[in-house]
Structure formats: C-alpha cells, structure tokens
Length: 476
Image: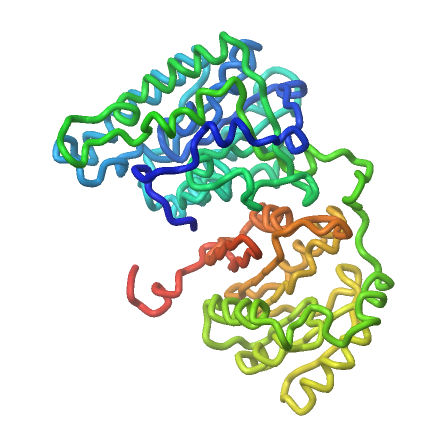
C-alpha cells in the first residue's frame, strides 16, 4: 500500500486541472443502468467519489442502494473529544443524511464492519453486496443492468482496496458492470503516475459530466459529513480529515471512474492494443536475437523482483509446484529449492533449452513446452506461479487461464502472480488488467499485495486463508 497521511501536502487540484487527460477519458452516461449499487468503505466515500453519479441516478429514477462497510470510527484516533463509539454514531447519521441529499429514494445499508480492518472481513462485505444484487435482480423491472460502484482497488487505502476487491468479486460472478472511484489517489498520486490507466492496458478512465443540479446535491452531501469536513474541536487530534485542498478534488464539474476492461473497451481491436493472444511465433522472433532477452541473468531489476517473489511465498516449503512461463529457468532454480517437485513450462523451445541446462540434475524438476491455457497439465499443485504471462492472453484466454489456475490449487495452495505494469503495445492486456481479473476470481483471498510503479505482485489462497502470523501462532 502507498504510504500517505491526510494532513500532509498532496497534489494540488490545479495540477490535475491543468493535466491533459482528454486522450484517456471516455464519456460515461447511465445508459443501460437499471440498478445502481454503491459501496463505500467509510461514510463519506460515497459522496466524495460517486456523489454526482448517485445524484444523476436519482434524477433518472433508478433503483439505488448505498452500502457503508464501516462506520468510520477510526477517522480520529487521537481525538480528545469523541470516542470511536461516539464517532460511529455520528458518522452513521451523517451517512444517511448525505445519501438523502443525493437521492431521497435511495436505500442505505450500514454493515458495522470494523474500520481499518476491512480486509479481514471482505467475505462479509462480499456477501452483503451479493445479497443486494440478488434482491435487485429479483425486483420488478428490467432484467440486468446492474452497476456496482466501489472504491478503486489501487487507491492506496487498505479498506478501499478491500471494498474494491469485494465489489470486483461480485461483479465477476454476476456479470454486473464494475466502476471504481479514486479518492486518496488524487492526494498522493500525480497526473504522470503510471498507476493511472491509459486505455492501452485494457482499463480506462470514464468521465461523468455533472450538471448544476447534480453538483449542488453533491456539495450538500459532502457538507453533511460534518465530522470529516470540519474540526471536531480546536484541540489537537480533532482536525478536519477532508481539508480544503483535498476537498477541491471533489468539487469538479465531473467525476472520474476506472472502468472494467470488458465494459469500456470496444470489442474490435484498437490501434496499438491488439486483443488476440500472442502466438508462439511472436516469442520465436523475440528469442531469436538473444539467449536472455529479458536480462534475467544481468539486470538488478530482475534479481530484486525474484527476491520479492520468493519472500512473498506464505510457506517456507511446498510439495508440488507449477511455474507458468519459466523462460530460461532463473526463477525456476530458486523455486526448486523450496519445492519437492516443480513443473516448469514455457511456449518457446529456445528458452526451454537453456532452462533444461540450468536445471539439469535437480531432483523433482520437470521442464515442458506447453501452450497455455489449452495445454494445461493434469493434477493439482500446492503452488502455482504465474510468471508474467497473463498479459500475453486475450481477455477470453485469460479468463480460462486464471480459472484453471484456481481449480489446480490444493486446499492449502497458493497462486502467485507478478506482472509488469507499464503498457506494451504488442500485448493484448496490461498487468493491472490481469490483476483486476485475478481479484474477481471466486473463492480466493488475496493474502499478499506488493505494488510498485514497475510491477505488481500478489498472492491468492483458497478462502478462508490464514496469514503468515496466524500460521505461526502469533495472532488469532
């Protein structure tokens, strides 16, 4: 997670306003939306990130449900004025008043999950969102057309990530459209930060323009969260959380959402972003000029990334392991030291020749050429390592690949995935898009997330998955 605090200087709204994002933003309307479900990790998230959207949906007479996962009782941990219980009571009322200002007919659900620890209760949030989707689909009116709107999973706040993940899981299962709204990213990030989608990697920014009425409703809703936009008192620890410079990001005449690739990208290929899976011929050409085109043996970037990957493994040792995309076998050798057996696969025979030489003589190691996801190995595995091949797949092939990874895990297994985050024109997908699809896989808990500007590394385990500390008996 990104490290930041609300009371430190962040990126100014003027800098965002002056940035030219016209080539990134895609216009968003509510066409096709019959039911809107807005998930908030804390009271005020809904007003800041999606208040305009809720107001527009209310003007159109759509069915709206707003779910608050927590009561936001941890917003002022050093307050000498209000206890966490006091804050919870205050913020619940503020939430109801704010949503009423946005859309008087909207339904509010307060889940009372613990503020600051939402990742440990993601399943409860997921179940609540699923129940609302099921109830909405059963209600009179047109079938389908459900939108789930939640905090952006890359927003930098762990509760926002957990809320976004729960929403993505439900959207993936039900076919609902998923939109994610940034909040704290406007504070800690910048227009040049590669964390923002560009469209080339399969995700895109969607812009909803707000008329005067929607803006007025949103401003009224933001003001209703008095405990956040005003100091609780003049004593230290009671300062406003949403200070004027930060609030300016949400006083725009538009709102920005991150759209799921299948919703916002055209079905036909777009220039520079092919959507078909890369073939064996692509890799034959890539390896033709070098035995190590990625620099696995020479680059500190690659050595460091391998170290991060190995450190992220939840267990010290595994039984059967499967490595997808082993290339010349540099990571494979390290994995072999932690596993009883290792099946290392790749699509390129030249790379596999080097891998076989490197791994020769190691007990329990098998190296095979396989074109994935079609040539999937039989059996189950305690560890599956997805070595930066997800973005070589078309969206359809990626869905098959990830589902086969999930089904191949033993009950205590781990799926480790690592991908480059910068756009590559030849790749059908981007790293962030691959990991968004990973987050939507049912039945898995994300137990590790490491996000850098250059790569993202995550570990998923069958739910409910204990933490490393829980396995060691250090915590319950």
